[in-house]
Length: 380
Image (cartoon, rainbow, N blue to C red; front, side, top):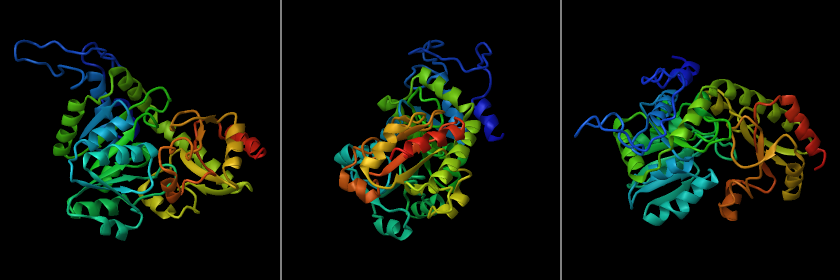
């Protein structure tokens, strides 16, 4: 089946109990046994729930995986995966990533004896040189948040596989509609389903998708043991959002590229970081690896914090808020918002400067969004 069809029918069709076309919310903590030593398909909602299972099956199908797992938040998905590693393991992490992931790795995971090392994975030689005998995984984002750097997933996963390590990719920015890491050799795909997969800024959630049955068993054990799964109402909302994922991503992509092209020509803009622009240093990789660019990108205003804050203070249609991927346009200042938990020296090393702004372009009419940015920039 094609992507759009899977998004609507990927969970298997009408509910078997009463033929409900939309997957019902199974708001129950427990399920009756058929008899002594005879549990049904589900026994306790932490271990499994029909609403959550429909979501997990759908996300797995969209990513081309064999097993999917839905979590209470994107960070819960990450924490569950990281809990499957042991003290003494070495994890290589790309040196430009979401602030919440950086905080989890440096302030929580590293304290439990897991060695976390940041490396520039855009340089494959640097990546190869960073491997140790105890390297167990490579942690990647592409595009990265918020600098929109791209990683060559095929090359990276080949390097990891040759050395017996897993490759993990956060695919939140593009969704499976524009990028399928498993098809490129990646072992584990992560999502904050809060973002594009849900798409309506009304729920938080996370997901993991894998192909390998042994990995699936390992992740399920930790999800169940830690109790990090999402609830049935949240699963219902994300599953509802998925049904329009394809058409939303097309609109996000179209609007964002148009705005990026407009900003690139604006006299008050220093740089636009969008992989769909030929000025992006990895434009050719984007053409090979992705089928679209998504709706989120970053740009730098000329000046510093003062100019950035002037723009952010004067937008009207763009909401100043963290998160991304909703139908409405959001705008934020990474240095003081999404990445404030990253120490200043690390932020600057990544390239997160005071004049950097991240924008999540919604599906409003693009002319209205450009007009809003134009009037705000006039006050910078």
